Length: 255
Image (tube, rainbow, N blue to C red; front, side, top):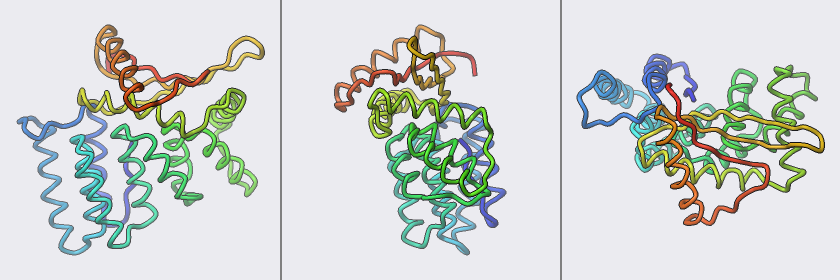
C-alpha cells in the first residue's frame, strides 16, 4: 500500500513507494543490496528535510522505518510528527504504514478516526480501510459519500456492500476481523513479509457466503501452508475468536 505524498515530500515518497513495490519482503538494513543502499540514501534526504520541516520529516521517517519492519521505530516517528502538528494526509500515511506492517486493528483505529477523507484521497483511503478489514466502516463511507454525489467504482463498491451484508448476517464486527488479521500479520512480520492483501467475497443465496482475506507471499505453497499453523497458534495466544464466514488465509505464490 502506497504512502500519499504532500507538496514537500513528493520525491521522497515516490522513492519509498518504489522500494516497497519492489518486494513484499521487509528490507534488512544489515544487508548490502540495491534495496538497502537506496533505503539508507533515503534516510540522508529525510535528514536534510528535518532541518526545514520536522513534522513532514518525522512522517517520512515513519514510512521509511516501516520498510524495514520496524514497528516501534515507525510508531515513534509518527507520534513525533503528531506532536508537531501532523496533517490529515500524515494521519492517512500513518494508517497505511500500520497496514503495511500487518497492524490491522491499529490501522482500523486510525481509519475510523479520519472521518471522511478529502475527495483527492477518498478512493485510496477507502480501499485501504477495506484491506484493513474495516468492512462495515467502508460501506458506511460509500453510502455517506454517494449521498453527497460522489461516484464510486460500482464493481468494487458492490464487493464492499456484499461483504458487509455477510458480516452483518453472521455477526462479525470490523474489530473481530481486525484481530484475526492481526494474528496473520504477526506471523508474517516474524518471517519478514509485508502483507499483500486480496479480499474475496462470495455470496450465493442459501448456498454460500464467505469473506476471505488472502495474504499472499512469495513462497512455495507448502511453506505458506505451514505458516497457517503458526497463525492458529497466534490466534490462541492473542485470544482472537474464530469468525463464521470470515476467513484469513496465507497463500504462497510467485510475486
